[in-house]
Amino acid sequence: MTPMPRDGGSGGTDRRRYRFPKGMRPSTLEERRKFYEREFNLKAVENWLKWRDIANTAFAVIVGRHSDIYPPEYRDIKRKAVLIDEHKGLGDVLEYILQYLPEGVYYDRNLYSDLSFCVKKGCDYKNCWECENFLGQELAFNIDPENVKCPYHGSVEDKMKRGEGLSFCMLEFKKVRKFTLELYEELKAEFREVRIVFSGRGFHLHVLDKKAIKLSKEERGEIAKAYSSYAIDEWVTNGEMRLIRLPYSLNGLVSRICLPLRIKDVAKFDPRKQAIPSFLPLSLHRNSRASSFQL
Ligand SMILES: [Zn+2]
Ligand SMILES: [Zn+2]
Image (tube, rainbow, N blue to C red):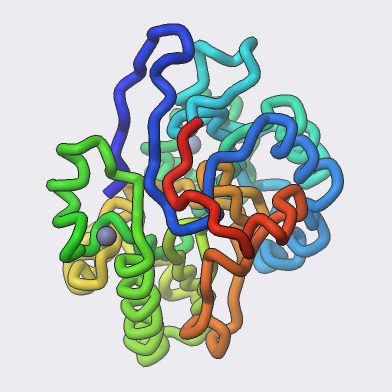
């Protein structure tokens, strides 16, 4: 479940505190710029997305929904998903990213034969399942640590009540890591191409088989229910939420790179030590930095 914090609207005093594992904290605008200018691996993104038609893939950015850090000119849209549906490829997408310096970058899991058809029609993309250019949707699972019940921090409802819906601890992380491996095994019994991506807080599983892409909304709803014990966001799997974080982009809430992982590397993956962008000096992770970061 993805919580939607309220807008504070009190002139910068609404910046929220989050509790993350050691070394994880929101990125500044300058750090986001540095990352996308110098470190963002566009070739790797292209390679990751090469099974789909990139020119007919929609992308999106969210400027500052959870971090409340955003370029001042985008204040009014800081919480919105800004759609990038008119581009000629990843080079154009990068230009938009450098313009918005977003907290997060996403792509639309829907597959379209010709995206410009929806642009011309003025689609809101939620209802494109009915569009004549709609080819299907990549099946995905989002496993997030807040959905795990923690002996210290309670259930997701407890965390939401305290306004800590995005905070997480290593106990919760280790549980979602285990769930990810278990769900992977289950999915591999049914599908051929299943990919695992560290999202910055938890994990994403992407299923690229044709039969998965062709699933109806109803079938997706059943799959989401069947696997709900793995702390997944049902609305990602059931197709309601079509956007998913773009691999190799920066998760600006925690300052970690959204990173595809080999299956053998998942069991030991540690977000305190891995997927760290170069704007965070390594020394930060050796000393005893406070685990809860206040902006
Ligand atoms: Zn459409
Ligand atoms: Zn916890």
